[in-house]
Length: 244
Image (cartoon, rainbow, N blue to C red):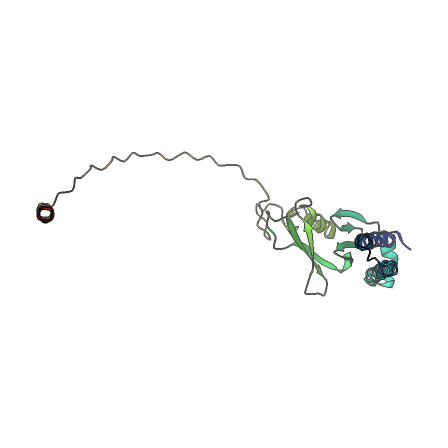
């Protein structure tokens, strides 16, 4: 059994064992509660523990078989002798292989089968990012979620691993991994600023003081004032008659 497969099997075995131990602890708590209430059944709980152990073992076999199925027999020696190094959260890179820990299993991709790797549809304020891995002859890419807060340079590292030899006038965007001309200020793919521009000092425009407009007093309407005075006088006269 090769070193890479042994490492993956050990990781799967630890994950399954931890999950089985969690279920076993929960069953132990339930058994303790039932025993305190004098309703415990020893044989029933033993059967539950045995069921958890069998299911955990079957899950381990299923996950290991799913990993081995991704490696063709003719490429097993290449994967066995490839030294994998961790490149990010759940990412392992070798000379010819890319291994990604995807939720409950592993995705194993050969470098010769990859055509492009880039970051897709992510924003700087988002904690989680999305990486698309394009395969030769496959229109739909593989998508993987990674932690952008602690591994923001992961897309660029993966892109550099896929295309290590760049021309002198080419560069890799550190944000999305896009290969483009080295003299660009903004990335053609994600639009991120690649070079800081020196601030250009411009003379402040002269501020011309504008004189305040003279205040214009509105003309009073004499007719309106006369009618208002008549109305007030009539109202006062009516109240005076009522009080008398």
